[in-house]
Image (tube, rainbow, N blue to C red; front, top):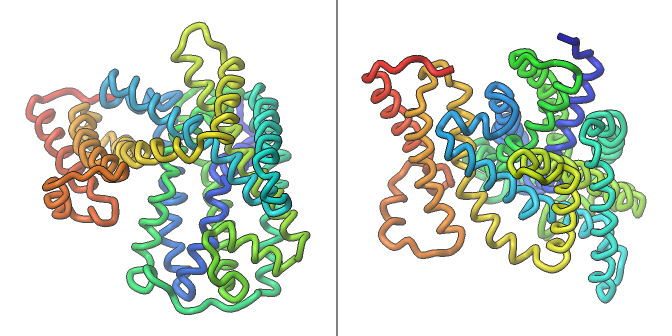
Length: 439
């Protein structure tokens, strides 16, 4: 077995950082900081547990199970292993995540500098260029870690660090009192907000890139791959936590210059201008574009790798072209409508992702019984399905009345207790039948 050098681990860690640090993750902490005010740090602690910790555990769970998401999902059943990954890859890839990478980077990096009358044409030119670069970077998946870890991520980190350090050295204001809903139980609110990023689903998708990168160095032993992934993931966790903390701090000081801002992107733009003038806006635009680009490359590479194995006769390269062409069209003509469909689907499958990750991490404790996975996922899936219907604004009638009795339902976590209870029932049933340990 070949060795994985420390420098390789660092590059892989930086790659994992770049994959998760999309534009949405970049613009959310400033909003959290502005609203939490003096409660920023306790709120951030809760946010990091679910917004950074869960994605890390998601990658680890997949590496412990095999080579890709379907290997993890097979712990439940072969049918689930076929359907669930397909829904996840399509929804967070070409149907949701990828089109957003182009539109978000355009809105922050380009839109402020073009007249409203030219925005449609400008978006078309930008998105075509954006996804052309995405194709170029994704066509050679074996070079993703080298390009991300050696070039793109260091550049992104340098720009973000410059903005954060400037804001720390000469703050534009001071943190004010916490605003609703952070005035009470800020840690719990941060925990819920981190859960709401749904990055654990992205972790299940990106894991295939991490595993293939380690295997490309000649490492094939599963335990060794898991160990390397955990070390590289720790680098990503530390990096993400520090950057989120810095951005949240900037947000907490932003009320004077960004009062009335609609979103984190607006806050960050006003902060960048207040700190560095037009140069700050240019740097912010570049940082957001790099963040979106790395995420887009990761999504198309992971989706194409998985789908090329699922669909005979269609190559990885062909899928890269097809997916990027599709997302270019969607980004220009149909993103809003598509999001109305895709977002509720993601809300519905997210509990399944968390249960799958959590159960895999505690797999040895319940002897790996399929019944534990099946019943736990069934319970989470039922609650998730009702959440999906609610997201579609479908009236659930009397069902809503009963759902409100579930602990944490109002916080979007009503599936937790049912999943645990049904998982326990599954263990009791399997144990009573004296079933053998499942690896």
